[in-house]
Image 1 (cartoon, one colour):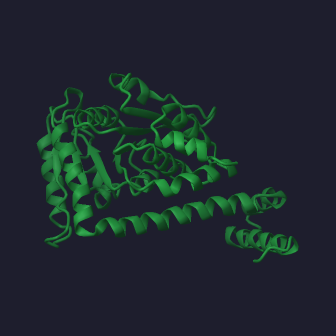
Image 2 (image 1 turned 30 degrees about the horizontal axis):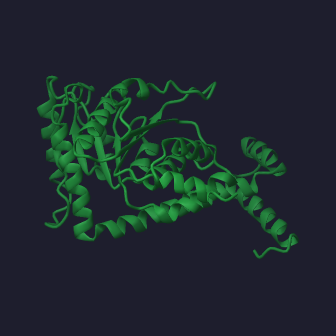
Length: 320
């Protein structure tokens, strides 16, 4: 299918076209790939900002305030809010829409909630595709809010140019986010709910840990900022820091290296998705049962699927 008209409507800022395009990429499959192929050449201009941290850290409220701050500067803002989904129905509460009601009616903001179920390529793939479409729709900043702190959140955050890691005081262990392996991906640390007791202590612990990082004078010095998102306090400084980090990437030449790393991850994710689609056939359930019964190991089963796929391609006259 030719998606030229849909892409043209996207680039003109038509929100209905964006909603339709996002629904297509969430479903995945050949239609989604055709749409992304048409969209990809027009992307690469938006500032992607990942927001991650443990549940209850106030990420949604913080994202809402950041969107308001950027809007006050005249920027167009897209928001991708990932909600946890039911393991039984696959549905999601989509509570971010409720918490971001103050953005309703602003045509310069577009919010898309995504359930954390998804297509074969996984959540990170669908979210990255959605970010591409918002980029094509000419949003200046795209905020990607994740469910919580974990491996999938790290993967999504790596899609972003600027990653905000949110922590709060009173979590039982003031350096919980550091233990979760989040320290390395943070471009900016945010101690939210800073009106609570212990906020300064958390901030100081983070600063101390950061001192053991890179000593390169030209490297980005990760700031630790305090916010009270429910009141908007500290959010202007946070937006300024995010803009400064993005400018640093451009001026230091790191933007090109980040783009190369992102491209490698996108290729890997796309290959995994296509490999699953191409090899998932009649033999799949048999091999799964054999793996569960310990009569076949996963690598041998995967190799068998690949060999079957190669033979199928060869019989259809396609090159291996």
